[in-house]
Structure formats: C-alpha cells, structure tokens
Image 1 (cartoon, helix red, strand yellow):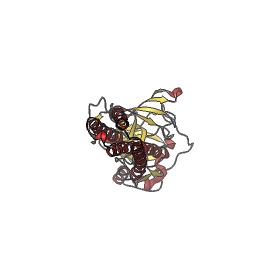
Image 2 (cartoon, rainbow, N blue to C red; image 1 turned 90 degrees about the horizontal axis):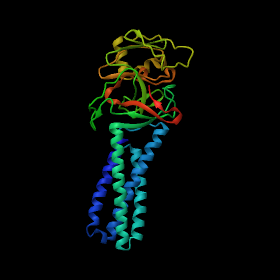
Image 3 (cartoon, helix red, strand yellow; image 1 turned 180 degrees about the vertical axis):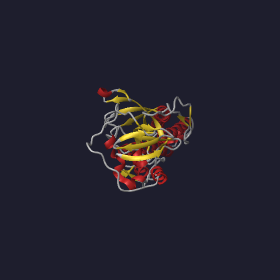
Image 4 (cartoon, rainbow, N blue to C red; image 1 turned 90 degrees about the vertical axis):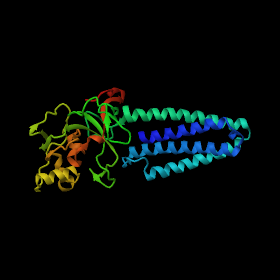
Length: 330
C-alpha cells in the first residue's frame, strides 16, 4: 500500500508543478489545452481513488493481494474508473471554460487539490513505510490476545528502518525477540501456493514469535518444546479442542522433514496432524518460527515453514479500536 501511495503522491506533485508553470504562460488562453489538462487531473484522481477502494475491498474479502505495484484486475478496474472521470472532466471543463477567468479557475483548483494530495499522500506513505502502520485483525488465530476486528498500530521502525525497494534495514532499535507479536508478509512468492485452505500470497499475517534462528522446535501433544525443554506459554496461549491429534504412520528422515518444512511442502505429507505433533526442526539463520496464540485455530509456521526476517514488517504495538480494548499488545 505504501508504495502505491508514494507513486500517487509523486504523480500529483508532477501535475502540480506543470500546472503552476501553465498558469504563468499563455496556456490559459487555449481552451482545448485547459480542457485536456483538467481531464488528465480527473482521470488520475479517479484512477487513484478506484485503486484504493479496490485494494480495500480485496483485503476485506480475503482475496490474495499482489505484492507488486499493481495487479491486473486492480489496474483494469482503476483504468476504467480513470477513463470515466477523465471524460467527465473533459466535458465539464470544455462546456464551462468559455472565458479566461473560468479556465484559470479550473487550473487553480486543480493546482490546489494536487498540491494537497501530494503533501498528504507522501506524508502518509512515509509514515506507513518507515514508522507506523494501521492493521486490522482478520481472524481468531491470536485469541484471546487479539480479537477479530481489533484495530492496532504496528511499530515498523523498532526492528530497523527499511531501505526502499530492498530487504536491508538500518538503525535497529532492538532485534526480534521471543514472544514478540509481529506483523509480516506471508513467506511465499507464488500466487499458486495454497496453505490452510486458500492462497496466502501477498497477505499480511500477525503471529507470536516462538523460535529464534538456531532454535530447535518441536510440538508434542500440543505442547511446544524449545531446544528439548517445555516452553512456558500459559500467559497467552489457549487450546479449544479437548483432544490431541496423533502422529500418522509415516516415517521421514530428519533432513527430509526439515527440507519439506522449509519449502512449505510438509503439510502436503502430514496434513492437520502437525497441529499437535510437529518436528523437530531447526530454525534457519535469519528466520523465525511463529505461532498463533489460539493454537487449535491457527495457520502458522507448523504448516508453512519459517518466516524470513526480511518479511517482518514490524511489531504489534497498540490496540486503538474499539476504545474498550485500547491497550498495548503483549
């Protein structure tokens, strides 16, 4: 989202600069130029507005979101909206721009709006990319720490400021720690991969860090063993099912088990039994093992492998809505 906002803001900035130049020249005398230039503003504004609405609706519907700048459907729908708004702007300005004063008013209004959008959108993109981002809890996998519909802020700079369009970070306030609740992009680059019943490519997840790089993680009868010792998680975990799933009659060598898990293919062999009987696996360097607090209702690292550090966006910080649940996330 923040990358799209950046390019929208940059486009509005370029439009504002050219418009300001046009106001000091003879372009205002040209009715056709003013009409086309106003139509361009309406088309770009319509394209951006439809794009933001399209992304919001796709996120709410649970569809896989592209991690690139634009998906095909997003582009086509937004382009159609931009064409409609552009044609309306062309018709309106050509019909009403009969005098120099009216044409100049069109350009001045476009300039004011484009400068406002440029400033606001770039500031929002900067905040979302480097500092703080809003996030809505989409499922019950983190109950009762986080409930469906909770709105929270994600601290994006605590693990380091990301250099745009790279996976590198600098100025880390502290490393990722065990028990941190983190927001991350699902660790897959293939839209065709299906995990936990549907494609997860491009979606943001929120889970708790259980294993750090180099740790050996197992799950036995639902209990997490970290480096062969039981992990005390009573403070935040819950188990809803009275029974535990048993280990299937399938033997895998440790290295084969590890490889299948790291490549997100282990679930094809073992299925739902990994919920209660999992591992042992060793967490690779610069990767993390994450789990939902609602252990019997969580699609997490047991089923789709470790999370690379470069995919972690930030740490869950503060629930701000609903007001009755306003508190820091622990």
